[in-house]
Image 1 (cartoon, rainbow, N blue to C red):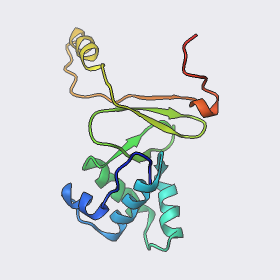
Image 2 (image 1 turned 120 degrees about the horizontal axis):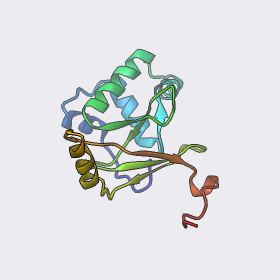
Image 3 (image 1 turned 135 degrees about the horizontal axis):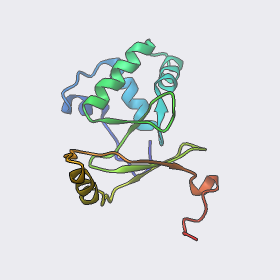
Length: 149
């Protein structure tokens, strides 16, 4: 399980978000609880099949869609051809994603609302939300010591 992440009762979490706790949804969510970073639908499918859960790839995609729609997980777009999925802490946040090892760091302090609202207003647009995903290299993969030069 992810360090710093409280233990989850996946069935209760599903029910709390208005979802039925089917074996497939519980299996998908259990895998996401154990995943420290993110995972693709194909990787989840392979893990679930390897653990003996009778599940189809289409069912994994439907479970992921339901979990994302309910706000339990987040799809990440750092791969060009596929989405990755992650169980995230509640509340607004952004992600730093290592393009080498796929480690993810959640950024909790967002100061983008005001500048985005101003930029949107300049174009006659009303911003109702935003997501930020920054890709690069983590410190372990050679991203440096985090000190700007």
